[in-house]
Amino acid sequence: MATASSSPRSPAGQPGLRVDGVDHLAFVTWRPRATYEFYTQVLAMPLVHAITATGWVTADYPDFVHFFFDLGRGNRLAFFYYFGLPGEEPPSDLMHRSRHLAFHVDTEEELLIWRARLKAHGVRVSTPLAHELIESIYFDDPNGIQLEITRPIREMSDIDVRDAELTLKALVDIVDFPHPSAEALWQRKAELVRKNAEESAL
Image (tube, rainbow, N blue to C red; front, side):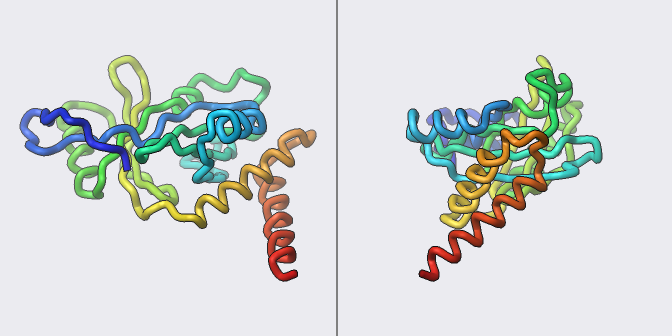
């Protein structure tokens, strides 16, 4: 994952406790096709992972696709594409939760120690939330910037890369529909999976 800094400093009272660089930085996109093409073709950053979710945490949270590009050295750049949002004026709370900086730690133990430390300092912090490859805690800095500390649940694999490519291909195919949705994406993705299986069988 992210490479360690050369700094020997660690938080006071916790010898050896430190985050290990940036896991990912997240933004929102309203142009998934252009975003995908720019980062993969212009900047040559491989697409390595994608998550599609409905009913995320709360029932009123919009359905989304969350996709990740590899920056090298275990660091990633991520984007959210939300279904059903009007133009480029999403609710401010949604933007706050979407635009965030995620720090990396290696183990569940470290994650829980960080959570306890944050709570001890009076910081409101979420319970650990697992999502496919990672488990994370979320909290705000004094400026209202959302931060995340995350640890890997399992290593990213070639299957994740292939799945991300199918997910983004399906998203690009349906994003200009009159009413794009997660369900339409899943249907298109299933068609692509069948097509690939048929071509492989030839």
